[in-house]
Length: 508
Ligand code: GLC
Image (tube, rainbow, N blue to C red; front, side):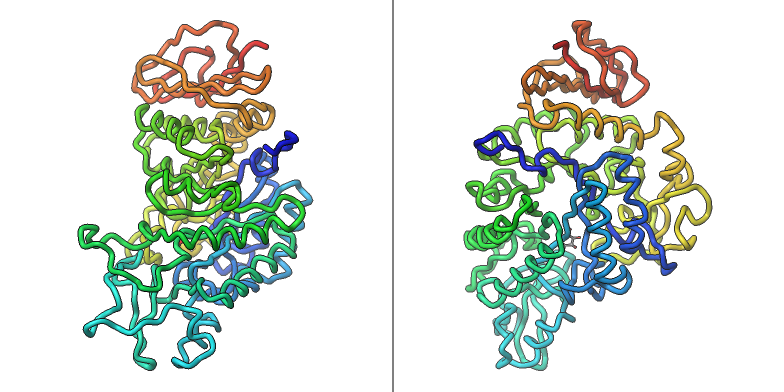
């Protein structure tokens, strides 16, 4: 909140992540596209989300399915055209939905003209746009490991040097200590801001600063990949640089950064003093076991460890991890997790298909395409029952998720108690409740396996109860608490079934 009490839109928002290859195809190539997003925006209106984050749709050879960008300022033909991007932005805005696009600043594709030029010779004017080094004792310059396995350096025969890539060899790391790189990447931000986007999800932003000495990583860390460790002070200065650029645009444009460092303390530092990222992903729930102790700890730590004024974020799934429904292996628990996600203090991010309760697809060896083994959670969204599920082809780029007929958006819309209706109900309650959107969060004592917290804003009081246990619990609550939403067929405010969750409203 600013001093005059104004709350920027992104603090009040629920963001829906679109993985465009798997949202909806319209041209029959089996890969989702921008027109598919435009066509299904009304699903998002029906759900009640406020904003979308669209994973990369730029020109790309697709070695990492769009996270290897060969032109930041154009659309890959498999997704459509720049005109289609403009239409999605305009159509979303017409419906009151904001649009965040994915900015990938740490690396480009090896097919980006910048890298081709850089690679061409040691004297190329773009040589210093990437990290080139001589080898050491006939091997790479240091012992860093890349994210998808193997070393983080690739040798270039022609110019007799090694280049750095924290991900695939097809994803060379940009050299952000070069002011020309900074200027070029700032221009990319301007390009999309000028087209009207409301902000950026920023890919592995903690990695962009590098120590030019490239010291070895301590041997005791073993083979752990560099992405989970890379953390240089200079990165904060680089972030402040583009934060100023984004803030200079009207309309409260925003940033949410992916900081893949395990501990909350490091993650928290990327908020700066309100001058770095507007939001940073909090990935703790992606790896938490389904226990009261684990969730209590996460909620408490977010409250305690984020600096004052830093606005938290919450996510249960994304395109890089197994879906929450698959991780929990239980429908009731997945429904309770939706209650947890949408009643926290902070901006929730809903991964496409979690609102349908989708499980990961079982992907056989011959269908596997992702170098990081993440195909299952990227299965195409089923929009309708039937062989093609609302897509123009029955055989999209990845297999359908399990139970695709019953889990299709059309089927769930007709079924009152479906996961999709639960998400919609939770979003409606959140939207209508200042306490859930903005209020402080207080953990409350609760018996057995029940996690309880209260959210309060002025007269508005909500109590959230989540039963992680296998047995029903009667909390014997004061009858003035009214049931707002329950994760399952619960009718009495204080009586929670096994793996049940509920949002209650206090008497005013
Ligand atoms: C991020 C993306 C992931 C991608 C990686 C490299 O972690 O979420 O999908 O593979 O960065 O860009």
